[in-house]
Amino acid sequence: MNKKGFTLVELLAVIVVLGLVTTLAAYSIFNVWGKSKQGLLDDKIQNIENAAVTYYSEHRQLLTESCSVDEKSYNTCKVVTVQDLLDFGILETDEKDRKITNDVTGCNMVNDIVTVYRKNNRIQAKMTDIKSNNTTC
Image 1: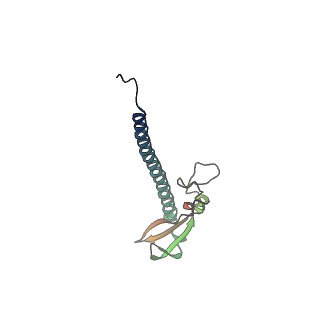
Image 2: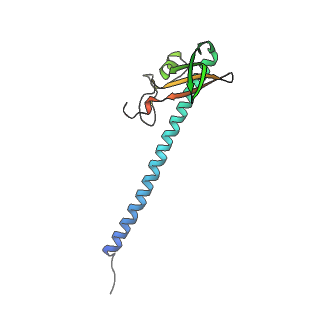
Image 3: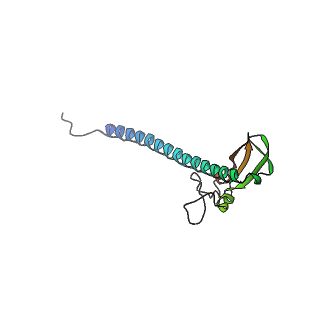
């Protein structure tokens, strides 16, 4: 007997294999996409912290508060928002409405909190409250 085509079982097997390959590929793509967004956000946070360090290195006299960062207390520090850094002119944004967008959630970062402090006679900054990570913005 001559076979002139594929059986139904062979076709179903091919469809199942293609479905599995597609599922694995989609998972990998979305995983890479999420990591790239997180990488962009990490770079943006680093830029914000560097801008705060730059500004307060030139204006050390403004570090007058007491605060804690990572469970350590500091006598000379300042808590500012990203909006404050934009207003000081030390942080730039490409967007015309002067907002900075969280790449992961799409929320505006202007209300995120940056704590600037002096440790070992060096100015350091850390984003201590990233309110834009909340998905309901």
